Length: 97
Image (tube, rainbow, N blue to C red; front, side, top):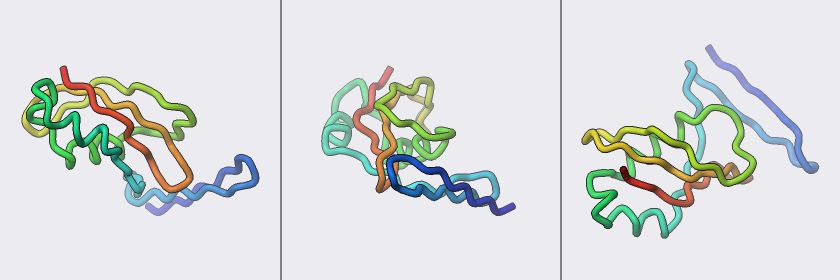
């Protein structure tokens, strides 16, 4: 199944392409989020876990929102703060549990 969805906001057309039910979204991780991965609370969370979690978020996130309940490959639960911008999905920070 191939879907292409367009929506309009502030004179800019956005394109969201769905392939087999999985969004192809460019995920941008801030330096702050990468730095926090070295902390003890985010010990076993990897960048691939963050990218997978960001791609699983349905819809459009216009403002910075804390999204809860993601689980890394190692089993650690974490939250992310993300926002959709024109170039992709921006992951602002990671909060380990």
